Amino acid sequence: MADIVLDDVRKRYGPVEAIRGVSLNIVDGEFVVLVGPSGCGKSTLLRMIAGLESITGGDISIGGRVVNDLEPSERDIAMVFQNYALYPHMTVRQNLAYGLKNRNTPKDEIERRIAAAANALEIEPFLERKPRQLSGGQRQRVAMGRAIVREPAAFLFDEPLSNLDAKLRVQMRVEIKRLQRSLATTSVYVTHDQMEAMTLADRLVVLNAGRIEQVGTPIELYERPETTFVATFIGSPSMNLLPLETSTSGSLAESAVVPSGTVTLGIRPEDLHLLEQGSSDSGFKIGATVAAVELVGAESYVHGILPNQQPIVFRVPGRSRIAVDEPLTVHASCNSLHFFNEAGRRLNSGSTVYRPRT
Image 1 (tube, one colour):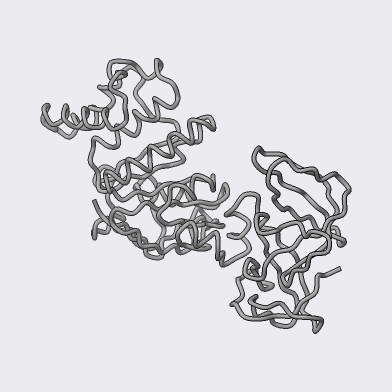
Image 2: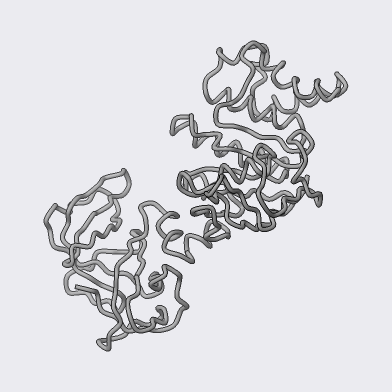
């Protein structure tokens, strides 16, 4: 086991800088998830840690050793890919043993490690089968087993669940988290799926255009996003972002200190509620016209349009009786509001005065 340290790591492809000075300290035994949209550099960064991509600048250390110039086989890491990368002509047992045999591991030690991995992953019945005889979920378990038997200093996962259906992804998320906790091995996991990221990570690293936007625990990023990019990327549906202007007409307690000029108000759909007729609320409130209602089981998402044609989404419990074109008023408590400046950066907490832009 080992920590992984990235110090001002950069990657350039000709004139294009894909990774722009990333610094990150992943502690021993931690499960860190790199998340972001396609093209943000997360897979490139993972491949640089693995040694599959060279670095243009900076240093990568694993277990206190700078590995910039080391081959992947010399870095004491194991990687799990989205396409499984199993040898089709070998049985599951042979796939698990292959890397160990190449390292001249004693036969009894190979058998011990295979038995332990097969038991942990519940693939004992499949050890004599070929990959083509397995389902997608079973193949992914074998790919994970091949990484586990190496007993590496760190696991690297490159979107390993992207080829599985929704039900299997949930099942494998639970398996991966359980295994990582039991093995206590440093793990770096890449995904574009924020649900995977939120459920798996000890810490999340949100990447945007080759840079780190924010690092923190899943709940920290959900409750206190530092930028509008993080605010809209973490959480489903995305946070509502409403343009506001400061004014002298009223105040909003426990919100952010807003300088003169334009700011953006962020409200998560789950923090917005219908304001019943005749009731009062001291927080933010605004009228909207219903454009669509999505029933997703135990709750519904209401898509509304504000008077300035700005879209807004909020959540209501159960089967909603709300009708399209119905006028509604929604409100949110002061402590659930987020404020961002013109550059998209979070503002500090305090008090403010505001009015919705019309």
